[in-house]
Image (cartoon, rainbow, N blue to C red; front, side, top):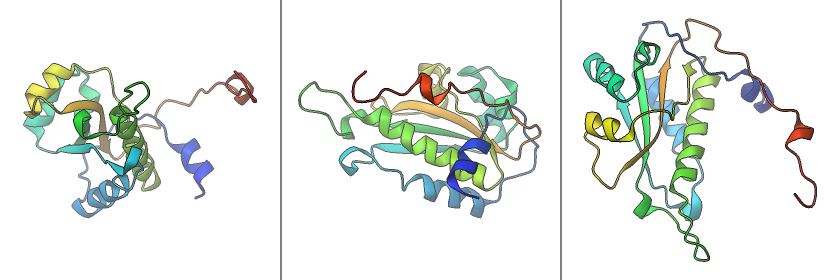
Length: 170
């Protein structure tokens, strides 16, 4: 499949079969994700892999949606802002952008292999940090369930290219 087809086919899945994701497949997806670019190649990220059912259910304290924990794996992408590149002129920190790029690689790698995911950002960071025992300097950026889809996911609705494109100037 070419990249256009992959990007078009990837959808947010909110229903998962209980079938396990083989270790080798998970490792392959995570290995692809780590190839994501980051500002100044700082790679300020980490991924928490949550497979244990009790721990997955504890994630409901941070994001109370049963469909999320129906997947056999939940991945939590985190960053260490102090380890990220910072733009000198205005102090902008690239940590969350770096994590977003890594998450995109992860979602696309999973979709290419027939697995479903759903980018989740509407969680309680403080509760998530507590459930996962994240150190104070680590910031959770995104979560995604990972598993075999039980449904087709929500159809994509995107703005037309003409609605987002600006030529030469905004």
